[in-house]
Image 1 (tube, rainbow, N blue to C red):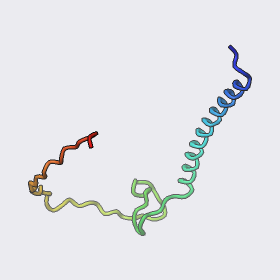
Image 2: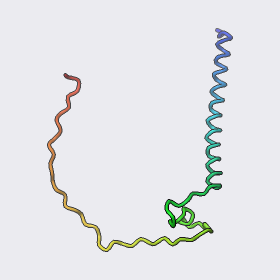
Image 3: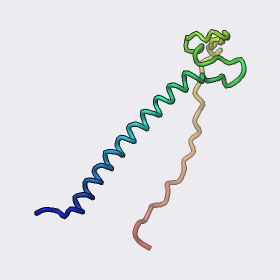
Image 4: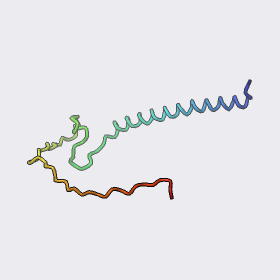
Length: 101
């Protein structure tokens, strides 16, 4: 049984739209990735506070512009101890009834 010509044209148009939409999604994701890579190289980030280390110098990279010394962490003077837990018992929640009124 043959389908009417209008139905075939509609189905072919919908198939073309499906393919076009798929390519638009792929190209837009690719363009966003390329744009973010280009912008990350062209516009490097900046430190949150003046004098703090930049991400490239903190990870061992060479920033070339300035060098900043990051102080090392010091161990605590005393090991932490567990705090005693007070045993407060809460009453059980009331039973839940579903469906009835």
